[in-house]
Length: 290
Image (tube, rainbow, N blue to C red; front, side, top):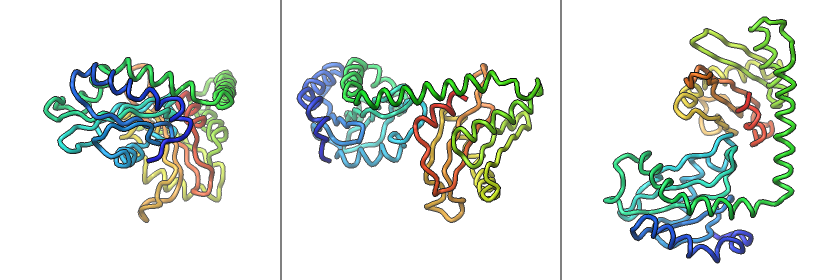
């Protein structure tokens, strides 16, 4: 992998220092690979190949908008070492980079999830420093644009929640929420599903696409609910059905419905045809707050 010029200019000269600090905090020799936001290799000390690490991270979906930060994960074994990927991201899940660490298996926890969490905690000084470095590399214009977009979405959301439409009828208020959010998210089909309440509220903005996208919803709803219950975070899939004839081709943005109890009760999902624009981080940001 070739490092981007910007990454090399700001991070590469400090890479050796980050490696030394990582090894000092862990008290053991480790192999380290640092990737930037485009998954370009900024620095590599050996161990797992950068290309293999990048492949797994892409499969995890870290480069796609999610609305919430990705979590550290053990991503495999290489030459007797356990490889863990530690993401560096913004608060709404936009990837800034990733630090990948390879350790001897004998010193690893028996639980992959526990090992990844413990490693992230031990390396917090390194991760915090890298996060600051990578955040500062983001162009000011990009930061301002993202802030303006999020502010506009929150203003719209405040306006929506203050709209008395529905006259106190809870079901009508939910219908209005689904209709308004489906339009705001530029989606052809939206649905709120809470199975325990036997509640389903749909909105089809394009009659010509309604049947196809409703079929896509029926095919995926159980999987979307399972994802929401296990991950408790938004899911964006911009290429459903292209690899399988059994699934209706579409694009999906789905968020969990979580009350104060913290238990996922259902999902709020939005669908678009394959030709529509991809769902972006600003869409995920708004859907997450809905």
